[in-house]
Image 1 (tube, rainbow over the protein chains, first blue to last red):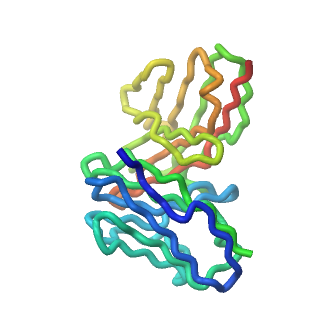
Image 2: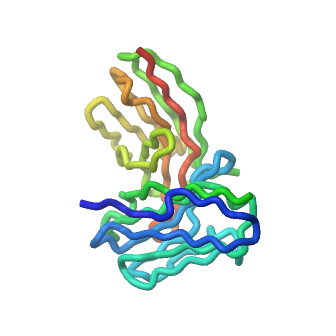
Amino acid sequence: DAGVIQSPRHEVTEMGQEVTLRCKPISGHNSLFWYRQTMMRGLELLIYFNNNVPIDDSGMPEDRFSAKMPNASFSTLKIQPSEPRDSAVYFCASSWTSKAYEQYFGPGTRLTVT
Amino acid sequence: RKEVEQDPGPFNVPEGATVAFNCTYSNSASQSFFWYRQDCRKEPKLLMSVYSSGNEDGRFTAQLNRASQYISLLIRDSKLSDSATYLCVVNIPNSGYALNFGKGTSLLVTP
């Protein structure tokens, strides 16, 4: 079975550019989570969806970040405009609601903003 | 203040050794606890849940002390393949399924 799929795997962009990260959760999972990982702050939850509805976005750093889940098999995280401090690894994870804490992570997108 | 605190290590141990990691959490209302494992430049993966009575999975034993808000992971008979970062994870109360991850403890098992 395919795991969580993320694209792109690596992204290098210049400050001010728009960045869109994509995630396809495991088929049948109905919870989806976006995380950011840096050396300084570790792994931080940005936002999570349940049945395509955003439930908690308190971790989204600021208005430059937005996330959508138009259907059960696709989600995007957008940063506009990007800044160097956004450089991090962004992970998407999914789970069944009945086992919501057993989260399956994608391979991550390594974002570098110069 | 970070809500989940771990000693970052690194812990360098020889193969076959027993090693223990500890973690403290700040929110006494948390009810669910886990250990995740993360290999270098890879994604985190669930290692095991931590139950109030303590639980064991092969060479791995997890313990929870609610009074002290303390979680531990014991690895017996360490293997080279156990080398990884171990993340202590706690649920965020009243926030649905949100999890709080510690920054991790790095383990290196040497021949």
